[in-house]
Length: 345
Length: 282
Ligand code: SF4
Image 1 (cartoon, rainbow over the protein chains, first blue to last red):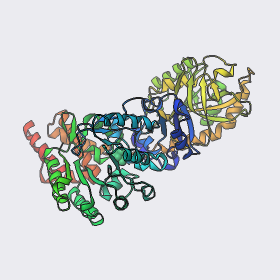
Image 2: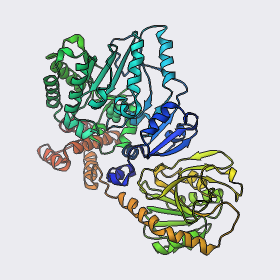
Image 3: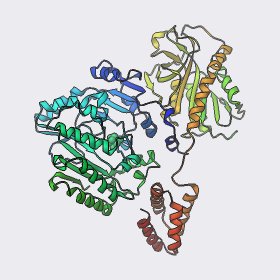
Image 4: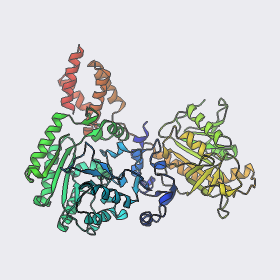
C-alpha cells in the first residue's frame, strides 16, 4: 500500500489548518517583515530554526500531505536574488529576462505544478529581506533595462493579504521606469486589487483555465469567472494585463473546453484592452515528471504517457502541434498576431 | 514471531513507561526477539529501547529490520521527561515540535500535520542526566528522542513520527519510582490512544488506479502481444491514464479485443497491435 495514495483520502478535519506552524530563522526573528507577517497569524505556533533548509530540505517529506496542511517558513535569502530566465520559459521578447524567487511554493494545489518536482517540501518559504532583492534589481538596472517575473515559483498575489509584497514592488517599479515587472497569478481577491495602484511597467498576468479543469486539477484556485472579474477590475484601474492559457492540458474534450474558455474570456474582457496573451501546451522536465508521478499516482494529468525528448516530456509533436494550432486559431479571432505569444517548445 | 502488518509503532525507554500500553493494546512479549523487549498485538509493535539516545537508535533500527516499514505506519515515542520551568505541573503531556540533540547542536523537526489536543514544546535530548538547566534548549529534556528520530527518519516520512513527553520532574535530580512513572503514563493513556486511533483510522481507504484484476489483464495482454518489458510498462501507463480519464478500462478493452482479436504470432505483429491500441486508448 502506498502511503501517498492512502493520505489522499484523509479527511481534512484531521489535518491542521494551513500555517498552523510557522518556522522562523533565528536571524530574522526581529525583522520588521517577520513581525508584520506574524501579526497576521496570532494563533500559529512559532518554532525557531537555524536555517530554512533544516525544515524545507529534510529527506522523506510527504509533499501531497503537506499540501493539505502547509506550514510557513520565514527565512533570509543570502544569495541568488535574481535568476536568468530558463529556456523553458517565455521571455515575451525582452532581452534581459530574469525572475526572482521571493517565495517558494504556493497556497494553491495544481496537480500539474512543476514545483512538486522541484522542491522536497510543500511548506511555503517566504524570504523577508525584500530590500536585498530591490538592491539586486537596481544593480542590474545600472547595466540595462530589466524584465523581471516576481511571481514565478509561487503566487504572490494570492498571498498579498498577509505578505504585502505586490504593493511594495509596485512602488519600487514606480521609481524605476526601466524595469518591467510581470506578476502572474490565479488568485481572485478584488479587495486586495482595489488597494493596488497601477503602474504602466507592471503587468498583471492571469492564468486562465476552463472550470472543469480547475475543479479537477487546480485545487483551491478561484473559478474562471472570479478570475475574469478581477481582470475587469484591474483593467478599469489601468494595469496592463496579460492572459496566459498555459498550461494547455490534454483531456478528452480539450478542444471544446478551450474554445469555450476563449469565448467566455472575451465575452467578459474587451480583447483590445489586453496587452497580450500567451499559450503553452503542458511540458515538463523528465526529472520533475518522475517526482510528480510519485506524488500523484491517481492524477490523470501527470500519468499521461508523455514522449520524452532529451529530458523534456511533452504530448508528442503531432498532438502538441494540433493543440497549438487550434489554440492559435481560436485566439486569432480576438487578438492580432503580434499580441500572441505561442510556446512551441 | 508474529507476523504484524504494523501501523502503530510505540517506543518507550523503560518497561514502566510501556506497561500501560502493553495492557491497553493487549500486547504479547516476543520471546524469540532477544536484544530488546518487543511486544506485539494485531497492528501494534512496542519496543522498550533502554535509556540513552544510542540505545534508542539501535532499538528503533532493530524494530524496522524485524518489522519492515510501511508508509502507513505511525511511530510514537512516549516517555517521561524533565521540564525546565517549575510552573509546569508534573503529568503535563507535550507533543514535541523540535528535538535538539545536546552535544551535536543538531535539531530535528517532526512534521506536525495532524490536529492534536496536546500542548507543544521544544525538547533537548541529552546523553546523560542533566541537572544544569542552562544546557537545555527549549522547555523539555529527555534521553531518547533524538536517537529515535534519526534512526526512524531512515525508514519513515517526517509526518509519521510523533514524540509525546510527560513531565515527571523539573530537572532537580529528584528520582521518581517506577510505579509513579507508570501512573503518569496511565493518566495520559486515553488522550494518547484516542488520538492514535484517529490517525490510524485515517490511513485506510486507498484506491489503486488499476485493480489487481485490471493489472493482471494488462499483463496477460502484454504477454499475448509478446511485448518487451519497456513496451509493457508503456502499455500499463497508457491504460492507467485511460482509466483515470474514463474509469471503464476493462469494459472498453474487452470490447476492443472482441472486435480486434489479438492474434499475434510474431513480435512484429505484437508491435503493430500495440500501435493500434495506442491510437484507440490515448
Ligand atoms: S498556482 Fe501556479 S504555482 Fe501555484 S500550485 Fe498552481 S501551478 Fe503551482
